[in-house]
Image 1 (cartoon, one colour):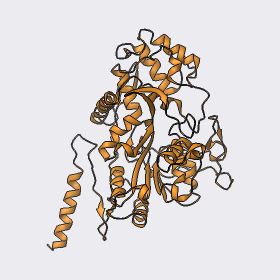
Image 2: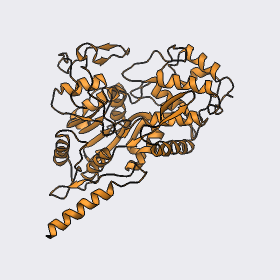
Image 3: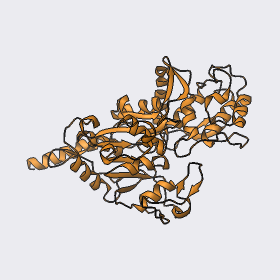
Image 4: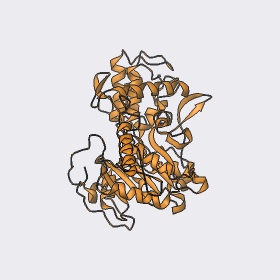
Length: 422
């Protein structure tokens, strides 16, 4: 056997062993390859669809600098990733909220007024929560581990945006800049120190990683998703981008302290993680949201653009909601949902979409008007091909939350699109 052949066998063995992570799915299950130049490229993996892997490698080779310490401040290209269902399968915001309900860790509002937990909570929801959780003392953890009625009302407001009586839980928000249930999950962390919350998030993380795929958990009276997995292909992608000098960051609509816990396993330091952020009273979290662009907005659709523009590029005020010139935009972005469509559209190089059949995002990606969109099936439990997307009539989420025709940048209407990649 030649020396080259021996090296090939050893490399293959290393790759196989790297995939043996035991019960810790969060451990890397693939190792990036090395290009002929010695720079890191993506590992071959059947999860990549078509030429997606090759196109990403080409972009990395063209824009990256092998071995550089990537920082936007020093001119490095920016790569942005959504978190839930992009970096992992399932939702860490859900995982944490459900864990806190099951373990009696959500606090009743300090002043006893449920309306203080969200500026968009309806009077019907405030009344329903006050009634269902009447035994809870203001400012103290609610007994949702034993009080099923309180647990059920909290879960209904969070997961369905409705009370158990089917009344709307939230109203009056801009649906392109705010998702009240996502924000409420962060606001309901009020009363805890971040160090305490970190412990809760770590416990929920371990529980959801240890649970078998497909597991459900009892939360109040209902069965909810009870497992999460890191995508090894996305771990490999993050590592390849970093090795080639990209500044890699997370932009998520989950609570920022929770995302930090999960993202640390992929090497993200706190300054590289953006999520829903609330103000502090000393070292204790409050329910008051940190604004963006001068208004109440969270990292959701246009709110994700706002947060990136403010925090990464220093754009202030209402201008943070506007698309910036190319030097102040990401080179690469990845996401899975309508909440990601704006920051993905801002990316100047490639935009990777994991197909979860979300209408506005998939209409935009399949239309692919500038040839920079990549659609890939989810890496774990991909969905079956869906029906036609009604892009020409219901492809756009208006600020009111209503659906409308989706338009391209030139004003033309995006035609209906077939679901082709799943």
